[in-house]
Image (cartoon, rainbow, N blue to C red; front, top):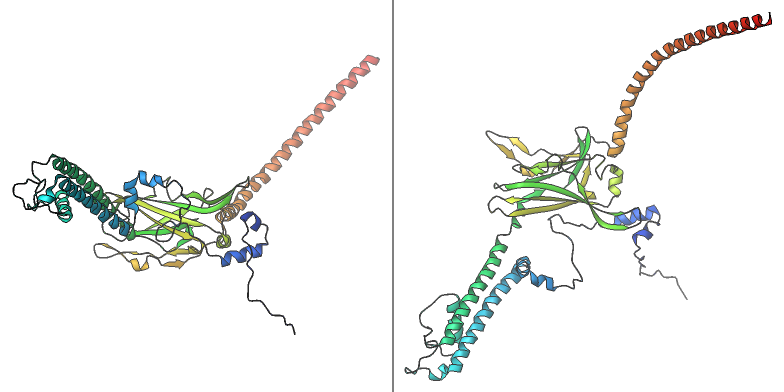
Length: 413
């Protein structure tokens, strides 16, 4: 007896390209967007979510070996640091042992009549220790090179020079890695959400930045980028297209004096990429705002950069930031417990373009009423002038007709 059994296996729909997805019903696209998690271009901690694959020209990393070593993780950097010193010590230890072996010093150990290249060198271990003492300039005084060994003197010079180069390279690499200002960016904080609300009668996109340290960031500047895929008029698809967001570049407001938390404002005008985006439209958009704060560390003078990003779900429409600065007895106090807090405010849900059009329409009736009154006053005057002109024209015409009639009668007589 056969029975219909539902198969537990689900058939996955193939992933379609963007051009094909545009032909699908709008409901299916919206449903797919709600299920799909937005992939960040820059994570909240500032790290770029981009991996480089299929890099064939790997030799380019070796041409800039210093930067390559500095960019390595600490465990690999320490491993290479220990490995380089150990290899150089072993190599020169082997060279000292080889010189002693070729000269026959190992066959005359304990012979007071024999002058070895290095006193008290009786094997590879002692040669290795002598190599460490020479390169690190320890000089315990037990193993000493003699003046009867020219090849040993040459090797001593080579090891001293190469040892200084290795020390300069590796110690410089470790110093640069330790002094990198990456950790300084950990104390530069961005608000969890960005907000859109009215400011001075205009829609504005705002986010907040702050510095937790007492040592300030010198020459601090802020900039923002809109990351959104677009399609040109010719049909070319540009993934993750970057568009500048004006946060005060033309007015100088992008240069910050970051002593207390500041609210960075972007005015949504006709030059803004958010000009035609409303609250309902924003919820359906797939975009990301990347904010970048740059400046010099006051203690070291090195350039520091802090990054963060806001996806669509992190942009709150109709909210403002809670004030965090209060005046105390003789100083200002910043309450970082309220740094990320926002409160709701009355904000139009339409786009900035629609808001500007409605504002313009609200001003039009006043101008129309004034113009209509002026037209009403001017209309009677124009009518009187036209009547007077027509009367004068009629009189002139009758006079002309009379003159013509008189001339005809005289010609008949």
